[in-house]
Image 1 (cartoon, rainbow, N blue to C red):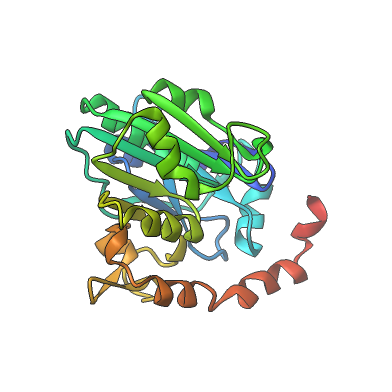
Image 2 (cartoon, rainbow, N blue to C red):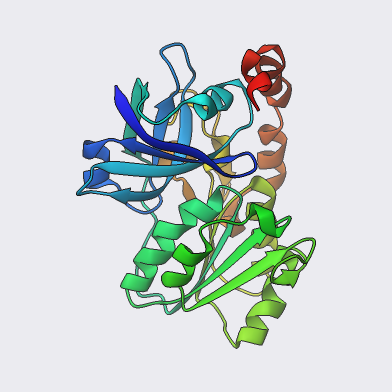
Length: 277
């Protein structure tokens, strides 16, 4: 059993989840993920790692409450425990001296982009971090990301903080900053991954996207996270989760992403979890 140090809602529907898992904390790298089960009967939930403390033996993730299993996870209190916290899994994000790197984060990806930005800064890169949200009340960890970035750019769709608009404004905002990235790394929802890759492709900016959103089993056994990359079948969990965003078949990916939406929502409708929020 793995003891929960903290579980709190940091913005609506997003939870910070800190677990005591010394073995994971000792070996985790930026871009890795863990598999969590909220109880013995719970399904496996892949969560990207957002931070860790090797000396304290703790690992932090940010998760979104979507269906029945994440609703169970969102009800757990500090001091409780989860039966499964397996990892680190997946290939770590490539960290090198690239030059100027744009890190794009949205939703739960704001958390998981943090260790990547930190490692890139430590490797000597100029790090520009762009956070995107529907509104300012959905932003978090701004101070943490500002501390590991040379420049922090915020975009909100309603204009309540930073530039008004969407990630479509990336080229314009970087031009204002006088920067041309040598690499772009994106963590967030499927639309953000796809749209950023579409924007950067004609500009020739190499773009790495984290394909965590379609994973379930996390070990390559279920086959749910398969996708086409440069015409070849890959598994997000064992071959990734990072891939070149310009090589992914996004039409196929988005079709697969919607396959189990009704089944995901149905347990929440029938669950008592909804009465607690």
